[in-house]
Image (cartoon, rainbow, N blue to C red; front, side, top):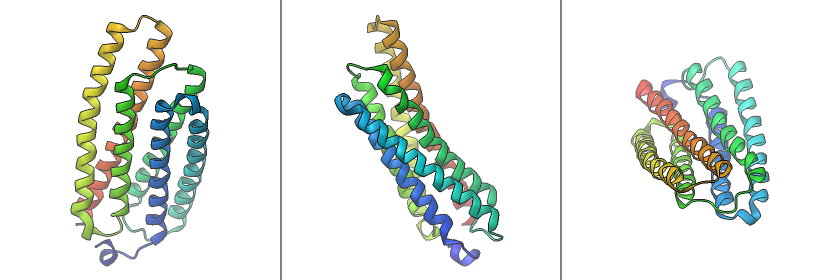
Length: 208
């Protein structure tokens, strides 16, 4: 276990968990915003709050990293994990803030499915991060990281199907542009979750 290998600073793990919690909330709200268009502004506002709180968590983590002499694992990995988690929720917020002025009247089934997959990916990420404090849970970490890879594979197929339908059926250029952009950004959320999963697997391999 990491506890046996190095003196530990519990706050790092607690902050990672808090960041993961905010990420799951934001991704879930984003999926809800595409399925409940009449109340979309409520979800958009909630995502902005989660993003602001996540920024504070990242800032606290960076301050702690600066002040801590011995860290539970490599300083570069802590910095990269903190930054990438924050990048994901920033990306979700960036998409969400555009939804109100996009004024979507309806959302393709494929895009809703993709948003659900992004929420699924963040939940697996959260589960793996909650196991990070102990390498006793290394198999569980790898299991959730591999599940994120499976989610990404499914998301790739969903995006292909959705974009194919857009090209074949959508004649309104503005609507085409809006939906194409949401597809792209939502898929990027899943890709970034995969990036974090790779960081986590690297940490486990280095200290196991």
